[in-house]
Length: 256
Image (cartoon, rainbow, N blue to C red):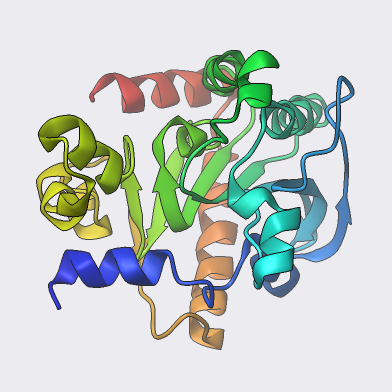
């Protein structure tokens, strides 16, 4: 099996640990907050307040299910606009109370249904991109599975973007890329190799800042390493004033 085929398989594996798992393993005293204050509570996006090393943080992530019924409840990790608006509400709250933001991303993309489009899916994603670029608090985004399209980027306009070793981050799915380029979605592996979507390739291009090694889908070493890195990186980011944070974030994305 080629490396990229293996990465696609492992990134999409239902056995991979989820956002809620990471929250429970890394943080303490998590309080989940619900709703976008406009339409509904999207269960594919979870978020709230937690403690990390005795400091308050806001944690937001895309949640996939662990079985069929759970996936149906979570819309297979494909957020509606309400999910992105809930995430933005929590991010603006974090800015108000000077809490750093940590996001966990695992989605094939935003939900493409008619209802989602009618309620402003594109606007909700673009609003997140715009607002995140100007938030005055540190932001760290972590790809923990699939990082698909604007649905992932809507939570990834961050000061640092990390990826687990066997995940991918792409402008669209390899199947979608192959369908557009060759009118043949079965050429997804070939498309993925052209797209350069693996953690190693993206680190070389400076699209991401860190790769977190994996030894299976769960190990105490991975959790300990991630927690230590979050504490150390947030300590460094907190040394910057808000104008410096925003300028560095702007320059980070301008170089693409």
